[in-house]
Length: 347
Image 1: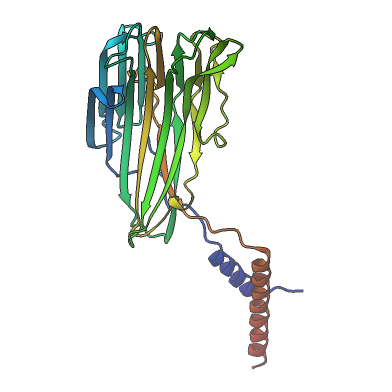
Image 2: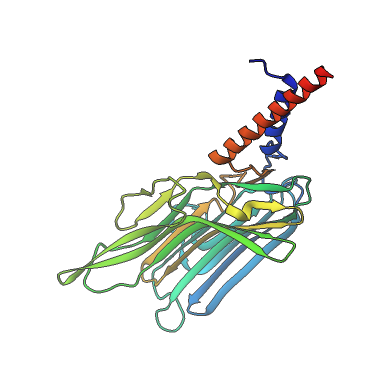
């Protein structure tokens, strides 16, 4: 059987029309969204729970770009407690520190060990929090009818630790806590005012747990993985010290599934907020904590924390009935073209 080349070319063209593809643009950036200014901030606080703020400060920077690099950094030295984390040994007192840089490098850390009353009326609970934050917003006005936002995260190594957790107690004890997490919230606003959003979080939270054993209590540090535990395959490391239990996770690189919040049409506004948080609480009396996510002093730089690319949205794979119908359509077009060519030769 001889196949008409013109008909075959027409069929290939039809298939290309039904299954368009290709990249719109995929700018692999040092950080964030191409051409959109980056707002960032460093934030630290110390408080006595519930409700009494001891110290709070924020250092925002607006409209920065990855290059030249700009930095927002805060270090709060507490008047209560010491730094017993084994990190930042040049700082003797308890501290909360935050670093956010426009190229994506950043980190947060808190450390506080108190040998007496944490302050306030009664025993109370003392808390310190450090946060680094990045945010960007842009409007899609490209030529492709639909594009897909893809976000790749590089989460720095994280560590949480409780200090002085006696394995056995004769009575119940207050629980100390330490937590470190990375959180990404992305939002699409359509021209009609409808919002779609997606949230990704990953981190660790450590706390004291007690179990009754006869007349005593078994006391130990327990840990919980926060957020999308199924999408990040990373093991939790334990330092093996029951008195000062520390848990850590090595740095993590992954692509975040944004779902429908990652699909943009012309006129849509896309924005995200990326936050690193370290925090802890202690009741004092030889108790304490530390928590770190990345390096709050920039000695161990982790750039490319968040990479954003924009590509033409892929068309869903056609179902079997659709392919059958397309095949019949192509065959009909080929036979029609062949019959038309035969009539032309008779004339």
